[in-house]
Image 1 (tube, rainbow, N blue to C red):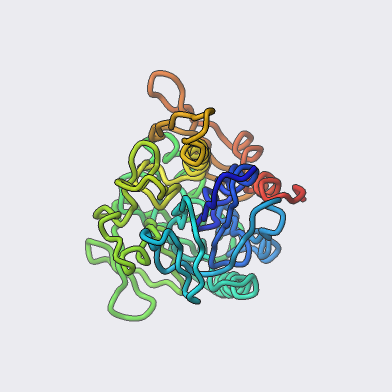
Image 2: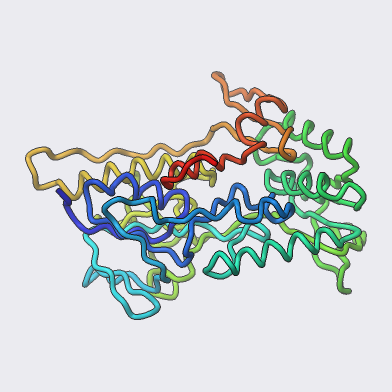
Length: 368
């Protein structure tokens, strides 16, 4: 029995989890501009190492047994007719629509184009430019900046690698100074120059960069890992600016509904429900939204369910690999403290495989 039409806009981590959770009880349509799922967690390594080039791309074809996956771009949600309007003019009717368009990440953690071929060429270009560079500058000392710096260093031991961070310690947004010290110690032991309290901007000449003190750095190549922005510009262009907060995130209530809309939900990086924009938070939101959507679709039946409220995740395990066989894991413990674990735990949990087997299983494929 299928209780209604659910259109999920966005096939990232939250989108696929939600679509899969609802596949048995609703008529699910998963809409994404990409033809395959993009395992972003593996993208930094794929941008550096040739053998990882195709690893982040996993087909959607085994995700849903009953629902369907549509490749296309949403341009508007028609709340009057209850339809999602595509760039082609096609319309997808819905009883519930879910915004799961995620966030835009800097390269190389970005899917360029819409096809696997286009994205593969983008990764190949990054691999070649890194292989040719004498000096690579990474700007941003959060988890992505540290991870990318380590990957580049291990791939290019003879090149100069500089990590410039505007904060006083690496990984300072995690709240763990010890983890930041471990990251800095590893990077410097492997010849990476770490610059703290160093806010960078492009210089006047090509290939030059300037910090807040006026110091110049020359580099052949730079990567900026200084944050993400939610993929909501299309909502603003469609006249839904009132759904967004000042940062561009979709405003949701405790049930993960768009404020004032019973049949519109938003999950994952795109909403304002949690400051931690990480995969575990996205998956937790998808699970709760799936429950609430089922409760809404079945609200007129005798087995009516009450909606559940989402609790923002403020503390969760965080793993930062330093290549495939080292890294640091931050594990929250009772009392508000954070345990910091080293290479062995990090390698087993994430660094070696970057969670690829787990994600492949989520999409119906074998771990290999």
